[in-house]
Amino acid sequence: MTIIAFISQKGGVGKSTLAQALATEAKKKKLSILLADCDSQQSTSLEWSKIKGKIPCQVFNQVKDIWPYTKQYELIIIDAPARTSQGTLEIAKRADLIIQPTGASRADLIPAVKEFHALKKAGIPTKKLLFVPMRLSNQTEAQLIQEYLKKTGYNCSPFYVMEKASYKQIQNEGKTIMEVSYKNLRKRVQELVKSLLPKAVDIKRYR
Image 1: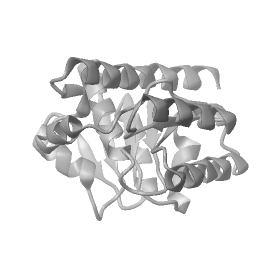
Image 2 (image 1 turned 135 degrees about the vertical axis):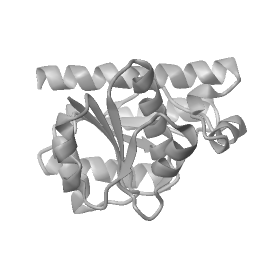
Image 3 (image 1 turned 90 degrees about the horizontal axis):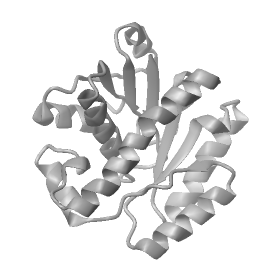
């Protein structure tokens, strides 16, 4: 059983977007999955699952209520609250991979790095921590953010997601960004999402 968690310091950075895309990819691979929505106020992933269908999703008011389900599923994907809490550390301790999406602005990057610093200080291995650049404006911005994040000492995905109106439109239809009609945009997201599953398996195998 594998646990992949998406965390963030703030909303709007693409946490739920990636969690939903990964859940869809895992479902295609015939894995038994649970998408755990830990933000009962927004319930973003739960509402999406109602439209999407076929993706089991449940809201959890307390993180501890997730763990009894670990014996029932091959993969649990946690869409954590868009804020730091004691639950964030509890999730990080149990997860095989902790993914933090971040934008390229200073307001996104500094809090994101501080969040990983806090988890590292609390004893979370850095090999479990992964940044994913999201909602970028252009290729230059993508290169700069990847260079910056690599200097922090944490893993950074070589894949990233651009800010595109077509991604928003497809999500409004209850689909994931992997289902966008434009081939190049779809390919980039597919490469990113498909890279996340083996990362979690490898971390679990060798830790």
